[in-house]
Structures are given as C-alpha cells and as structure tokens.
Length: 483
Image 1 (cartoon, one colour):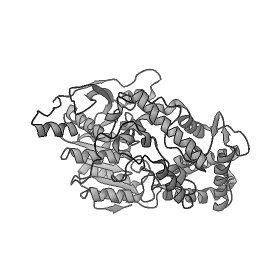
Image 2: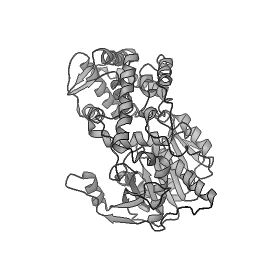
Image 3: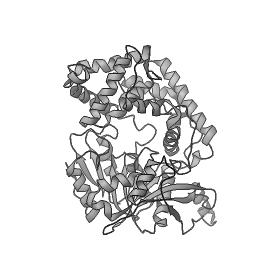
Image 4: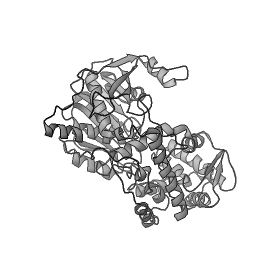
C-alpha cells in the first residue's frame, strides 16, 4: 500500500490486478483418508483454487494459491456467502457443511464459500517447523519459568524467520481481505454476504472498511474490538475466564458424586490450585507428556469457552485426570489426549505457524520483556489462574519483520449484525460494544447469561438462530435485541 501511494504521488502508473481471476473447480476429496473432502463431495460441493498475488503491491509478481470450497444454493438463490471460522488462521473448507445446517431455511439460498485463508490448510502453506504449538504459553509461577518460556517464544520467532521468512511480510489480515475480494470477482458477484466467527469478525470488519459497498448481509459472531486486536488480544480476558472457572466449580461441586473434585466450589477450586501447584514444582506426567506451569494453564483455559453441560462435563474429566496426575503418572482420555497432542507435539505446527504469523503481521507489540513480566505480576492476585497465560510475551516480541501496513482503522457506515454472548470468556462483551461504535449502522444481538464463544448455530438458542436466519433471508436488520 505504501508503494502504491508513492507511485501515485510520483505520477507513475499504479499496478493493477488482472480483471478476470478464475477458480478451477473440481472434486474435493484428495485421497481415501480425506474424510472432510469426501463429506463435501457427498453434499454436492466442489473445491477449487484461486491464484492471488503474494504481494498486492506487485500484482503481476509471485502468486500464491487460495483453496476454496463451494456448496451451491439449491433454493431461491440470494447470492454468495463467504465464511470464516476465526483463529486467526483457522481452516474453513468444511464450514459450508456446518453452516448449511445451521442456517436452516436460509442455508439453501446461498452459495456457501469455505476458504482456507492465505498460508492455511490447503492454501499455499507456511510452516515454521515448530516442535509444539508455539503460542500462547503461560509464564509459570516465577521469574525462572518466565525466562524459560521467554526463550521458547523467541525460538518460535527464530524458526519462523528461518523456515517461512520470505512469506512473513505478506501474512496479514489486510491481504486476506484483498483475497476475499478476488474471490468475489472470481465468482461473478457485485456484492457478497459474509459470516465470520471470532477473529473472523475482525477480518469481516477490515473487509467492510477496505471494500465499502461490496457486501450484502454480514454476520459477525463473537466479535473482536478492532482497537484491541493484536497478539495481546487475550490480555483483558483474564477476569472473564476467572469468572467462568468459578462458575464451573459450582457446577462440578453439585456433581461431586460423579467427578469427586470437591463437594463445594471452594473445594473444587482447591483441586484446581493443587494441579497448578504440583505442575510448577514436580510437573505432571500424563501418558507420554510432561506438563509444567507453562502448559497446564493453557489446558485449563482452553475448554472454558463453553458453559453447556456437555462441555463442562468434558472439562471436569480433564481436571479429574490432571488431579490424579498430581499423585503419579496417569493415562489421558481421548479429549485430553487429543488436546495434548496438538499442544505438545509438531502436529499443530502449520496451524500454529499461520496463527502466529497473522497476529505478528497485523500489529506490532512491545519488545521489552519487562513490560510483560510487570503486567503479569500486577495481576496475579486478581487473576491467579490465568494472568500468567493471558498476559505472557508472544513470539511477536521477537518477530523478524515489522508489520508492512498500519492497522486498519474501522469507521464505516456498512451494515452488519453483531452477535455476542454477555459472558463470552474469549471475546468479552465489551469488545462487542466497542465494535458497534466502529460500525454505527450495525445492530447488536445479545445472548444473556451465556459463557460461550460463538453462538449462531452452535449454542442452541432459538432466539439467536431465528433472528440471524430472518436477517439472512429478508435483509432486514433487527433493532438491537437481547435473547
């Protein structure tokens, strides 16, 4: 963008993009083990690739591939809807299958586009060759554990520079928004609709700002505050997760006969505190994995973003296993075992690499490690379980390249429907109200008394689901509404 501005000021011709981007559509299944591709094929979807510039400042320079899926409308067609599942860096090819069901009567009226954003999934990938999921990681209990994890995140940044350095300047949300607009052109639409969850709300907001007049119906669920979005985006969610943990202890105490974690909320919390204490001293052996005070807070944090009974039961099983591990080695159940495989092995290297690179490419963060240590210490008392995680230094403090563009300032009259739970532990409700101020023509749909990140089609609220579906069908935004 800076290059384009300089060329314009000098009177030189501004590089232009080809007018006819094309998607080569084909079957989705790659091989016999590709269950998602098989499900897409069975549903009548097609998959394809779109070539886009690596660097939009050099539109005729090197190209990368964006992988897409399309589930065509089968009813009275309204248009095309692009989907994003958040992350950042979450793959999206399979989303049309889930959203076709969630959208009910509206689902068959859109061509639903799943998209692996640049450098994610089947798109041209980046991979920092990480030995484990590189971020977030907790600072632990003391200065020595902080220093240990600080070295880990510095190593993540160094690995990304070594293995993906040529791509890093072009990994950012603004380029993904540009890719979405190339998709819009390639499918022949003057306007597209959009539905995004979590980080997808930030991406959607950036698209609205960069490409005004090119959207039809927009749903932003689990909204991010565009001013707070960065690699420090978790910094303000500690109190909400402490509250979610306390709420869960009441749930678990009422089911002590099943989980044996304590008959009162205080006793359940004491079990959690014992897990953290032993992790910080002796460590915990769970199957083939050794857990410490850098990893255990993330294990306790991850499943808290859902207050439904099934999710709380899963969480209770994880806590029970960790508590048993304080007395000696244990074997994990499938839920914890799968989580630890993603966290502590190279299995999630590509996914984690893309997530970190997008965050670091979007906005610079402080590079002084003392900023993070002081922040953690200041908040340990009020946030005893999660301050060391949500306020810890990230690889972006050591990132080998600076963001190539300033963050996008969101201030647009474009219309959207914002969906938010008032107790969301990941994207707190204050983020939703902040986003609405940046999108004054957006309307807010609030689900009360819910601690869940991602509501539409996921939580089971008929009020929320029916309101969103009505908007998608009629294009009539409701007034601000509470369910």
